[in-house]
Image (cartoon, rainbow, N blue to C red; front, side, top):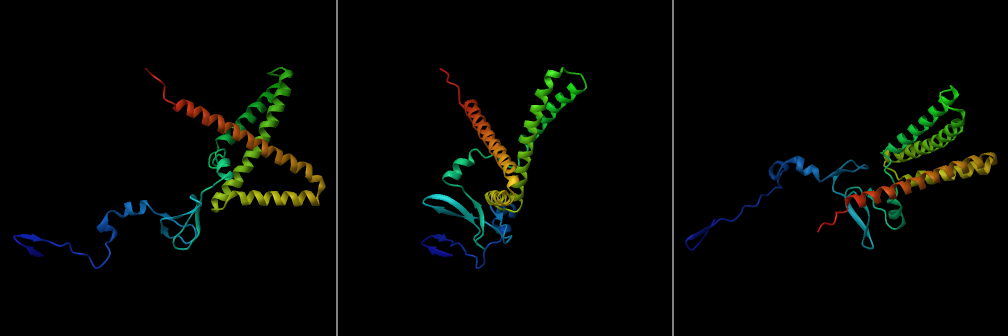
Length: 212
């Protein structure tokens, strides 16, 4: 404490040691802004790496492992049409529709419906069953990649390489594998169209009405 004229000035005392979490605030608030690194298991705040002004990825400041990647360019455009793999709503809808058409076919077999509806039930059951299997396969690949903190594109690249090798060794499987990839491509196009119309409907719903 120093005396300046008639006024006394109290200088703040600096602590020789860093303040603890209990002294600066709640430890729960301190952990709120940290995440756990999947490589070294250390609580940390990720450091963002930018590429030409655009965020590319975030890394752990302790071990340097990649924590999250931010897509840029074409990958960022394709991400708009990508549905998170954690959602099983599409698989449930496809399986439900396959069961409905299967029930229609079964009803025609037991005589509850006319025979003219049998073809409709068979075609619907086959189409929605195939798309349900494709959706289940995609969910397994995406969830496996997310479970081990990997990128799913590496899994898909491996699947394409394996399918190419199998079709080159066993030519009789080439047609079946091509049909599987056609179904997966049709499934992706369906998801793109569904996401596009869903986002358009949400934008029109959220648009404020003009009132005078």
